[in-house]
Image (cartoon, rainbow, N blue to C red; front, side):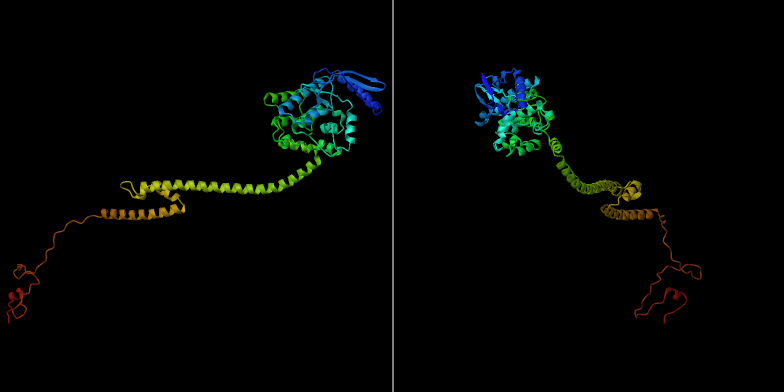
Length: 427
């Protein structure tokens, strides 16, 4: 058995003594192997005392000071404490002071939870009067406790305490540390705990997720009860996927905005002002981009249409210009003419101009040959005969060449035959 009492009864107020007896009576109703059993609560010569189960071992704080446990060992310890608190919560008892000093490890290493709110105010006072350099309970205090909102004290306070205890077991320090109580309370209320993996990258991701969910500022965002926390820790120990998920960026931003409304409004105004200018620039750039895309689309469409026209022209030129239908000119095909007229691209026009000139010359040659073939051919005529003068008797003189001129030996011209008939005589 172990006996716990106060050395100086005069230091306890009447309200403190009444609260001591009420809370001690509540702890006496709890029967769980993970909770230090309270056998009797009484008073001797004005000094209150508690008779409880004796645990031969050391506190979890002393154990952690000698070195951090392996991840699975830390998860097992916190899981056992979560099951102990689940038993207490089911019976309407809230611990409100979960910390390594209030956890005892027996000879087999099993954790036992003790001091359900006993002497909590005296212990805190003693810690804080020592210049505030070494802080005990406030380092594991939930934000609703630090704010003084007594109406919000409930099982989530113990869930937060278990998260702080797991955090301490993973990285070797509480979630928040500060040089004074005032700064510590401010950090508990408004700051987010540093993720354990930033302090020690070897920490398991799942354990970090579990610890940070327990340490959420809003009670509703923690585990719904101690059993749910014990189940997730059991999943980690057994190598199964945990159910908790790390908060996303939007969720963290929303939580920060609710805790710091003034700063959030200022940041929002700045963001809106920047977004306004960026939005105008973005609209202008977007409009230019759309215009460029439309121009590119039109150019591509024109290019495709031009290629199609070129293909049609090449086909028509080959089909009509190079191999015209029998009996008609090369450009007599209306389809060919329409195709040639539709093409207005500069290159196509140049090609067509050359082709049209060649085809026009060919057409002119064909038409010229056709006109020549259409003219009537002349009939063959007999050769014309030369008329000769008749003599006085009506008889044609014998034919003699008109240009035959006999030459005398002296070079004089002989008289023509006609002159001899007219009685001319040589001299």
